[in-house]
Length: 458
Ligand code: ARG
Image 1 (cartoon, rainbow, N blue to C red):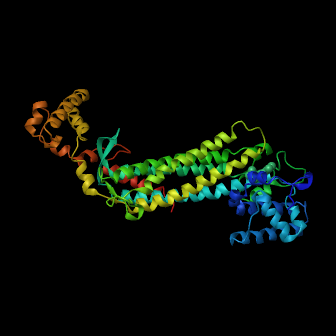
Image 2: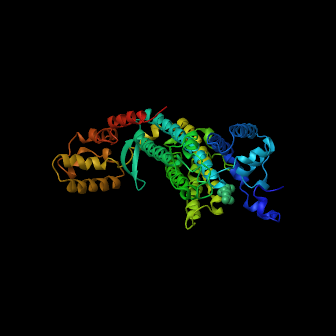
Image 3: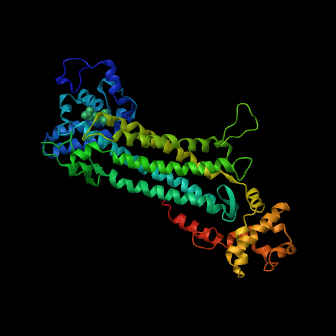
């Protein structure tokens, strides 16, 4: 089969080289975007009088036919045609004859492939933003039914202070909110049009880059043709945002793995999101959150891969850059999968309120508040801290929790302690008292929940 660029060559491409250099096995994912870009380009060629409008129309129709065949899964791509761009151009020439060869006037595969990827990433980023929001919705749902559910709050994975379960889970809401904002912001830069930069230096044809940019919904055109075809920072930015997002997913997943363990028993994941063991009949494994946590590696890897690929490349296009695609596709698809599972898993998760409420009663996490209790009565906080430390030590030796001590026992340590300590140090009081803005006090959490709901757009 003759190559679209075969004119200068006297020999067939080595078969291994053909296989090795072809990208069609993966860049076929760009087909619809490639056709969208080509249609905008050819229409512009017509309006600019670079080719007759009738021929531009014919080419546009040919592209539509190919698109519908691709959508029906009827096309077979050829490795000899190397990539999606030449595959489609070849199909077009087969479809409408030699006039199809006019499509590539005033453009190069270099601006073409960059355009395709901007279009691809714009669509996928928007879809991912929506998926992040479905996760936020599930979080808001769980938070709404668990404002007064109490769980231990941890630092160093040691019980620190009791908190509202809603407060804990809403922490992730805001992480995802910033992830959404980051993705949204990246769209500004995805919305630059490389089309018309041609191979690297622009073109001699009187093309109109503004027209194609507008037709493709881009907000501006790259002002420098070399930059347009040689940078991939818009993909790097996406991969960075994706890395932060999956890191958040991974931390939440880790908590779900812990919380659903025998040791914690704070939540029960729905059976539909767990699997059994082939040998241990009692097991119910949290495979989904484990895998979500595990997916972090490949997403970080894709970011590192592209950073490394681009480092040290001279301007402008280099074939190395063909390697920019698989990591991008993989990250998009991995995130789509992760977010699509995370939302329903959170939604169907049961919070074991008995267990969480009783666990905050069986620890020493009200010690800070006991120190505050003395401090409010006039003792310097440092001294109060010391006294309560001694009480905690005493209670541990007696195998009791703080509220199991009698008033007489308390008085041994400080005369300032009165009967009201028992009420003030109950976990619900301890939580309710944290009224500072953004704190875990139940009223604060209700406010926070309202504000979270206002951030949801659908
Ligand atoms: N398949 C190529 C890629 O993905 C398209 C651009 C090829 N350009 C070139 N000058 N060889 O990078």
